[in-house]
Image 1 (cartoon, rainbow, N blue to C red):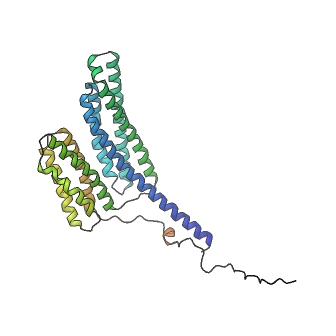
Image 2: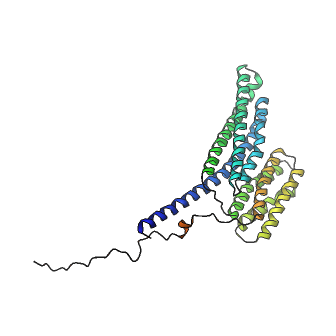
Image 3: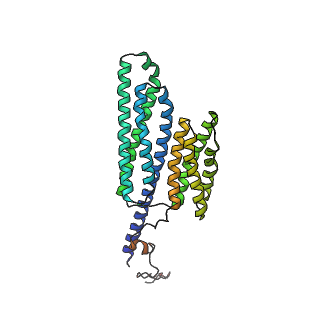
Length: 296
């Protein structure tokens, strides 16, 4: 194999590795963006209680997005192109709902303020904040659609299951603290919600271990505790956080019991190509050093 061919194969291998790295980064960005959107949605739950009735009803449409975000999150963990196509459909639906909620709320607030009604003037700050946050969510959903579109253009790439399990439980950990703090403040704390405080750090540490049975028992126990907490907890904010925990824990539990995925198939020519170096036995001959003597 000539040196030019070696350089060409090495270039193709580096290009393929860059594509795989870019795809993995895009997939992680989708999951992190879902987490950010959920945080903003929780903030809207606070502000909309002080907003006008029209804004409260309009932003209520965003609650449907929780189901769509769960679909995006679960589909992002599946190694199929069809799963990402389903995630694109859910992201487009979330974008349309976000734009609709922002548009309806803004139109109602404008008419109310234009009529100079006293109630609208008092609730205007909270209404404006809620609508701005809803618009931010709509923009993030639109950017989510663009990112998923880019993922569909690249070759499919599957990261390790242990890394994804660790990420999901790392996301669930702050929601566990939020649930416990809210219930303690409301004097409605129950032992069921404390499971996440112990199980999440344990799963993050033991995710790389090969103790599949132990990981399965812990993840199933956490999932059962989430389902039970939905029956025992009545505080609205805590229930919302528990719903998010249930989605994250369900995805992590599915990953624990899924079989190990096969590695990504790389073209044979790229795998078998040697490192791009000049062969040891070069066809070029080195000239002997000329003598230091000057001859005439």
